[in-house]
Image 1 (cartoon, rainbow, N blue to C red):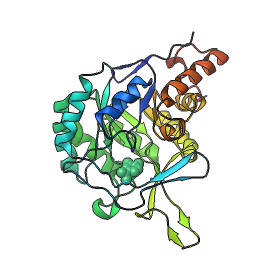
Image 2: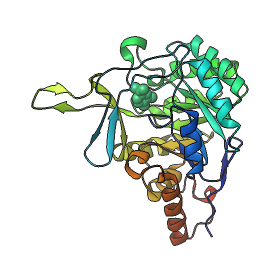
Image 3: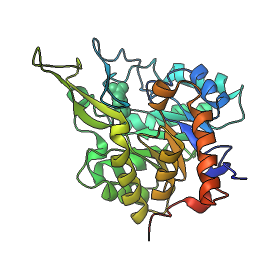
Image 4: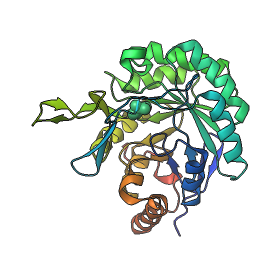
Length: 305
Ligand code: DHB
């Protein structure tokens, strides 16, 4: 029998599937729902120091085949609320719950790391790669190795909880950024955040999202994500949470063979419902049986020859 249980960064997972940070996980209840439905762990949507309303108007759109683009503008209720939300949710599950922090300055990343540590999350994911708030915060830290390393060092200085830096495909060399954050002390990397894109309504000649551009997720993102995981696995020793376009068991295994030790799932919840985790778990087991694999660990990085 194929065994889906695994571990990453000291977290014991009954499945390698992790609810990815994003639209589907703004509350403690949504984290618990993912766990109940078969996720091995769950990551909450990014929190900032102060509450944010996010962008107004049209913020999310499906397109083509099983793909989405969104520009929520990082809506959240602020760090104080997130601490309570995580503490309350963790009382109701043994599965690892993971925080996610977002800031516009290196100092605020440090402050958020220190504050969110009070909730004792199993890990802190660091969102240096939101493609949608350039106007307010400038170029994302994930675009350049030095900027990404600076945030990593500041976060490490402010917490003893393992951290995963969430990298972006919107950079010239993701593997250089991966190397820089590893050297700066990152315990893990999440590969990848959404890819910047745009949809235009040709009847009105107007971009569809109110923010004009947004982050692409789902099927359109998968090959980009798999290559990013592959390229990073070539150059870093720290584990990788592969995220991007995982809709089926095959997609999850592809990420693992590229080098992921665990796999984020987000957009799949829109297309396969809340049962996405149990469905993908069953499909993974089926594929592993067919291919003769018994464990997750034996498949990690197999595509590297
Ligand atoms: C948003 C943030 C992200 O990190 C992302 O990948 C997509 C959208 C947002 O809240 O706008």
